[in-house]
Image 1 (cartoon, rainbow, N blue to C red):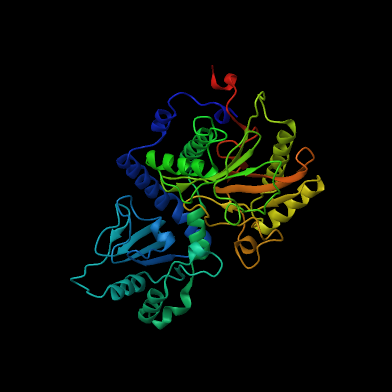
Image 2: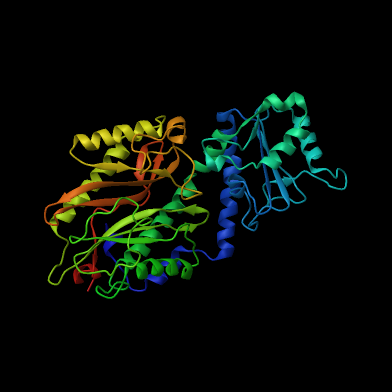
Length: 446
């Protein structure tokens, strides 16, 4: 694809056209929040049957879901912040209240006058009793970590104050919390395309002669260059980048060797197959991307055909996965079907695809884990289905034997994909060609 092989002069200025200054970012974040509260949340509450959702957090110990609801100028909750969302279906409206000293941005209005009622918990009980909800959702969950943000102290305090007649109405809000985290709006998906484009561009520059001089540059050098690039662009990353090497002289190390057993500082040499794992955070969304590059040997102008064939096998595993992503199926069902299809074609696939969005490892259905290829039991891979308007890191690998190298290699790929009402699409393309180091002159526009 073009963005993999084109490095226009002045890449930093190209990034500058994508990345907003802080003030403009804040305006976009708050506009998206307003849209989500007023057009997304009511439908999710109706779908999950929760007419009152209560989120409780204390400063520096924020519920992961509540944190996504704070306005751009709130970097943390303040004191104890209690948010109450009440869905009045009869009048088709939603109340957004804060049992807090302040309005929480422009969307959530303070409903507590401390001078009139000094006890914050008592004021919360007044709100509950005056609206008489039938199902009160709290964020506790065994299976979904992001939906388990209510700490024990606040839970116990809440239940101690809540009238006994309401105790049986308290339910886990896990389905609602997950739906809030995973559901993307049309505008968010426009922004997501820009995020993925920036991610691809950073990888393309990292895997180029601008950064890598074979025989001198190490994998650690590239990792730290990527980390610094993100900082210099005014962005953040949600994990430290990793870069690793596969080459003919070395035996294959187990998957995730970037975290356990991989040499930390390998020298990059001609003939190496490079792999990176990299993601950024911007406008409260996250990317997660793995791509491959080949270091040309003297006289080479392209990667060996056997490596290109191996990449095509990786793309086939992607196809088997995405073709089996159907709304309503659990992650385990999708995993089983995709693996079966790949193996029937003679491939050796492993799939470990996860939701992506407000968090890097986000909430939704899990389609395998690298060490759980038989399915994820007692977790969201079993009990939570694939839903429309959601984003996933299409993360997987396939093992390929190379007679030329007399060993197995793994083609490890990861790209952001969107599952919408019309099915699956990649957010901004996928890698179908190896990045080349250095770029042949014809690919540099010279």
